[in-house]
Image (cartoon, rainbow, N blue to C red; front, side):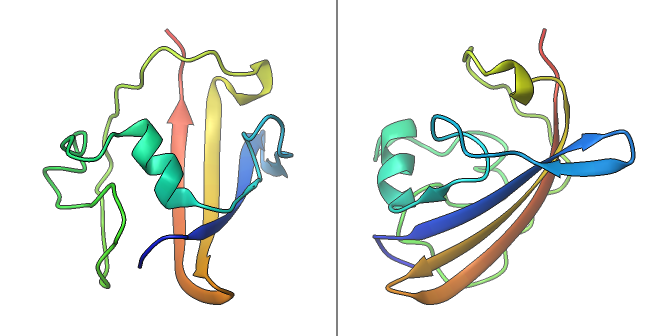
Length: 118
């Protein structure tokens, strides 16, 4: 999969037994990103190794992405200090992302995670 890769994300947060879709606010939440490759290059400069545990499990973090299945077991990630809006802190989340190029759907990614501030 090569640039430009468009990603349409649906982000949901658990509130009790319900899952509530979060809106897209300041490019966080259920948003559409027109060029994921560019975003990844800004977050992890080209030539920089992918962060753990992606590196250990052979999961790429830059375009182009080779066709195949990628699986990441339950893992802990250390995130840099970032200021998140209050509605995006502490909680359980799930994300669905549909990735496409020139209107052709190329991938679907589903993941679940928990955020806990320190």
